[in-house]
Every structure is written in structure tokens, then in C-alpha cells.
Length: 349
Image (tube, rainbow, N blue to C red; front, side, top):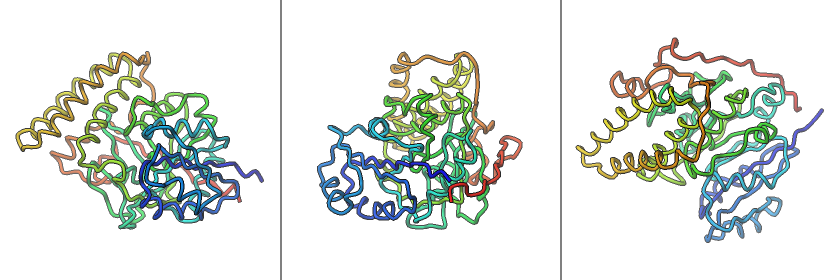
């Protein structure tokens, strides 16, 4: 029976204490045809030296500068040969058998190009984690949500989302990618730098006919906030700017214009509320995000047809703020088709 080759890529910048906590769990992964690649974004804290000493089997790729998430991963992907690429954040710990359900599902379902595991909090392993939870969706204006997480509210994991399903996007914190699909549509958008790049990649994969899924049988544990805390204004800036660029890249002109008008109203209403509440830095981040997204739009072309549109047809921001919908299970079923996928037998054992 074929045993696919898997390369796990971990991009990191000056995060030695986190690596010391999480990397040993990755090394204990029970997969026979595995390469672990550490992509060092020019760290100065001795990360590569520590890894070379403690784990000589790990391949180290030293980047000449901090290329952030997108280019840091892309450059490493170009240097590895594998059937599947796994992007794994440096602050993710894993159980030994986490990889097998993902690869087994991918082998049995060749239409799926990207998969994520269930992502739980490192410190509270019975709660979903912010970065992807149990599989992500977009609402009709491009706001992300996930099974187990809506905006900053995360749910307790009681097995309520343990069915594999088709989703809009898989989390870049822990994402298995089919190499052949990447070769056909390209890698992460390096203009994005940080945040939303995996959602854009998944949208492009869906537009090209591939499917995205979550395999909850596999689970990992994410510390979160290792690069930028959730309340950080720089993170807000990247999220706003990159969300707008993603919409521009993946929607035809007429559809984009209609979505943009609604986004301007909602985003700037929230920004005004922040300003009145004294959070002027957050307001500034929103404005900067819009200005820079508009400036960078000229680098992209737009599709002529609307394909692979966001699956959730509601307005999650209004439902969250005005209706108090905090849990994924609170959302009206008629606005989202879950598209359950039957879990395959283990074809890799």
C-alpha cells in the first residue's frame, strides 16, 4: 500500500521558547514517510542552532530576512518534494497520530485539496481555538467564521462538530495541502504577508474546482497569539486590508462593488464606535486597511464570473452584534449547507 510523502513546514521568527514547548510533539509524529522542515525567518534567538542540536533530523531552511508567513512558507514549499504539504504554526502541539486521519482522508477523497484538523486551545483542550476551530466559512460579505468560533467567542468542544464536512477555508495554523493542486493554482499570496492568506488560497482552490474540508478525527492544540495578539492594531490592519484584497481577487466587478458598499458601511460603523469609545488606534487601523487595499488593487485582475461564492449567506457581523448569535449552532440552517462528507476507511495503514 502506498505511503504518501508528507512535508511539515514550520515557519518561525524569534520564537525559541514556543518551539521548545511545541516542536518535540511534532517530532514524535507517527508517520513513516515524513520530513519536518523548519523555515527560519532570520531569527536571532538561536532557534535554528537549538533545533540542529536537539533534532538533527529536522531540515533547516534559513531565510535571509523575516519573510512573514506567506513568503516564508512559499520559499520552503518550493524546496521540498512531497505528495502533501502541511503548514503548521510554530505554536501548535500535536498528538502522535494527528497526521494519519488527514492523509487517509486526502488519499480517499482526491477532490479535496486542503484539509484541517480540529484545532483546540493549548491550555484548555476542551475548547475550540480562535484560529480555525473546526473548519471555516465566509459570510456573503467575506467575514470569516468557523464551526466553534464566531468572532472572539469560542465554544466548548462536546463533539458537536465531529462530522467531516466541506468548508470554505482551512486554517493556516494547521493545514494539509495537496501538492498537485498547489502546482496548478499557485502558492500563498505574498502581498498579504500575514493573515487571510490561507482563506484566499482556499478560495482560489475552490474556484479551480477543488474542495476544502475539515477532518475532526485529527486534532491539534494551538497556543495562539504567538505572532500578533488578537487585539493588536497591526493584526486588525492586516485583516481589513487583506480581506478587501481577497474579495477583489475572487469576485467579479459587479459583485465586488455591491459587497464593498456594504462592507464600507459596516466596517466604518464599527470604526466610529471605537473612535467614540477612545480606541482611536483601532479606528486608524481600519482606515489604513481600506486605503492600502485600494492602492494595491491595481496589482490584481478580477474573474469574469462568480464561482465558489461564500457558503454562509447571512450577515454574521449583524447577527453577532444585534442578535447575540455566538455559537455556530445558533445560525439558521437555511443559510448554510454543511455538506457532510463520509469519513473514508484508513487507506494508508
